[in-house]
Amino acid sequence: MRAVLLLVAFLAFGCTAPMASSSLTSLEQESPYRDLDTLKEGTILHVPTGIEITQAQLLDFLGNVRIVYIGETHTNLTHHRVQLDIIKSLEEHFPGKITVGMEMFDQPSQPALDRWSRGEMDEKSFVKTWYENWDQDYGYYEDILHFIREKRIPLRALNVPDEQLHELTQKGLEGLASAVREGLPELDSKDPYHRQSMEAIWGGHAHGKKGFDRFYQTMLLWDETMAQNIVHYLSSPEGQGKKIIVLAGGFHVGYGFGIPRRAFRRLPEPYAIVMPHTSAIPKGREYLLMDVTPPKLPLYLADFVWSVGYEDLKEK
Image 1 (tube, helix red, strand yellow):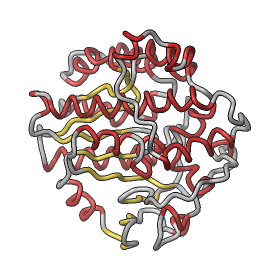
Image 2 (cartoon, rainbow, N blue to C red; image 1 turned 90 degrees about the vertical axis):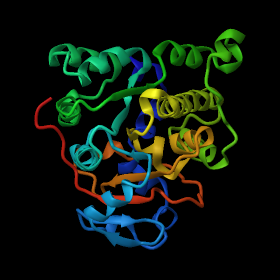
Image 3 (cartoon, helix red, strand yellow; image 1 turned 180 degrees about the horizontal axis):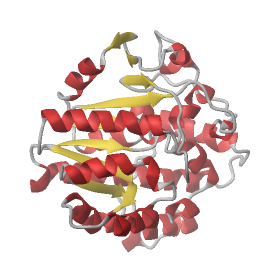
Image 4 (cartoon, rainbow, N blue to C red; image 1 turned 30 degrees about the vertical axis):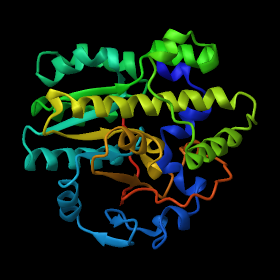
């Protein structure tokens, strides 16, 4: 399981940025006009202008782009409800033209996802596939996945195969055989803001500089693979005329320097980033936050922030 292969630092923040963002980055940096933690639940903010909009206005805007990135904290049901609301609306307005891509599945699982989307796989078998790919509770995503099957929406596996991830984590890029390196997507390590953020996270876990390069290579492989898979799908005959909604952890899409920028490098299509934002961390979930000294980033957190509360699964 991929969670075992990755460093604690990446799992702790890389996939849960929306809830941790206020402790990582000054609110003035991520939202120049409005303090995100003062937004009432249900508020949708256009971050670059600081103007509040309605849900209908947001969905009208999203209808004009080909790629919609929606961040998440994996263990917050309210974030997944935002994702489902957007998927339902876009499917209603563009029937048969919507695809959902998920970080939670790696490429070898694509045949199983195809059967699920076509209604050819029972839920027990699909849940087994889920836990072969991801370690968060299936219940967080159950409603989304049921809607995908109900509407026969194509579901795409975006993530890197475990074997590639494991080999890079163990050996580093310099230790891979040339044939293996040639099979990897292009890894762009030159984005200064992405690197600064990852260095802050690494330092926040008290690891210091030791081992950072390998950790960063792993992060790059994750984001570049998902970007490449999005582009491959949209450029394929199957993806012609389709929109894709990408569900991924907040750090993969926040600030645009994870998946979005890397996909745009390959295929300059219009896109938008929507970030569910939870300002209040419930008691007992304080571990979702990190004590990190943030870099100063001249970047917006997202195009839109949707303020929501926090809700966990009632049963595990």
